[in-house]
Image (cartoon, rainbow, N blue to C red):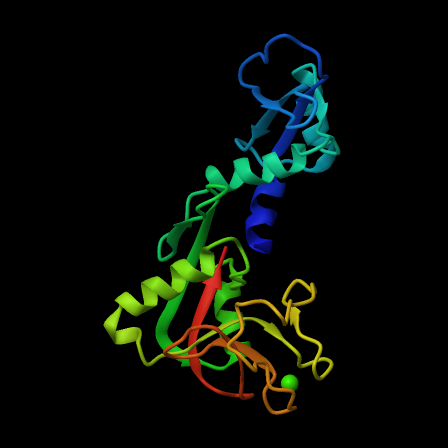
Amino acid sequence: MKAFWCLFALGIFLQIPEGQAQCPPPFETFVLGGSGVEFCLYFDMEVKRDWHEGRTACQSLGSDLADLDYEDLHWQVISYIHKHQECPPGFKVYILRESGMEMCLNFASDVRRDWHEGRKYCKSLGAELACLDYEDLHLQVIDDLYRTQDMLDEGFHVGCTDEVTEGEWLWTDGTKVNLSSCHWYPGQPDSVENQNYCCLYQNNYLYSSCPNGMKLFTLCMI
Ligand SMILES: [Ca+2]
């Protein structure tokens, strides 16, 4: 997800003060879920600018850089970006059932790599090792893998590890992994020092702790 954010962080969010009757083009209307207050936002992705240049561009349109600290506005913006995101070549689009957000996944099955090699490969694609803890994404992936006969005996590295502190599983962005979620195979992860890397183990594709250095296919995500 980091690469995705990086890409769009270089676009500029423009915002016009609330209370205006209609958002002038190219601004789009966002209605807050609680109060119903309308905000006008423009995602300027024509040119990449630094922060000051971005602010000047906003001001030339009678607006300013966006402040998203209003009710669910930030969430709406995340959702908007996901919906307008196009997956790069080689990535498959998954649409989350509830929010409609699009996720881009790449099943790197050209070479078997260990977890670190896999992560390096994902980064070379502008991606990161996958985290499937989003709505029904993991179920969709399992369903797809079951339908792909030549993948049935393959495992995939995904983006969590306890290599820093034994037993403390973290995603690649540093957030804690929920170890009691149904994403894990029952009894996993193993609390041993020679199994520090999270994978979708073959045949069930639930999270498991895979042995250090084990070479598997890699699941990358943007
Ligand atoms: Ca471990």
